[in-house]
Length: 221
Image 1 (cartoon, helix red, strand yellow):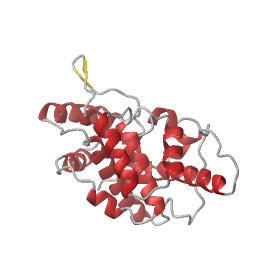
Image 2 (cartoon, rainbow, N blue to C red):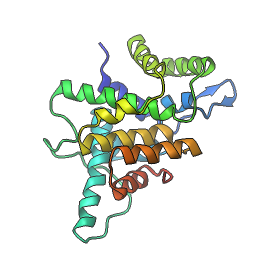
Image 3 (cartoon, rainbow, N blue to C red):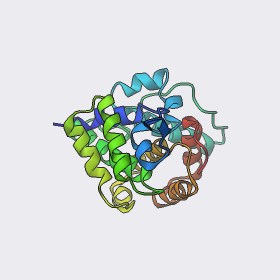
Image 4 (cartoon, rainbow, N blue to C red):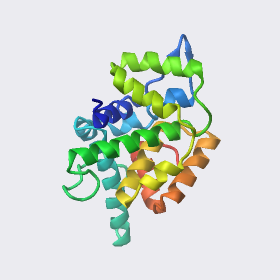
């Protein structure tokens, strides 16, 4: 059985790595799915990497919690802090990280789907890219079951609607957006448009979106 939370952690924890086919770097949707975004390496250092040990859901929950903490600070009239040097795990029962293991796995599956959807937002994943991803997933020591799940997601038509509909709370919506930014890294014009539309559809406050980008060291959408 696939541990989806652990798989999500592997995908977002490889931030900054380039997936190569021979000597040519593939700056494509396929590369981005397994390379993570450029900002992921900045996020998962220090405390962030400690959080990541508990799985991708915990890491993204910490990131989303920080963004909303900044939002509430600004609402109280205080100046929001700059990008944090470390991440604080969200309080138990806060809605950012489900306490039930089954609920965590369901959320991890949604976040993997969100990551793949974002990575496909500027094009399709062709056969050459799929082979390159397969090679890279083997280097990451993903199990055949994990590879199968990933390729099943990649084979689905590009559609943000299922991801948006499944983000039923502000906490989950923030995590969906965060993992999408990680998947995209440095955005193309099409990817920037996708992130703008995603933030709008998820009904995220502008300062929450900006906080996520600052923490990830990612370009604004």
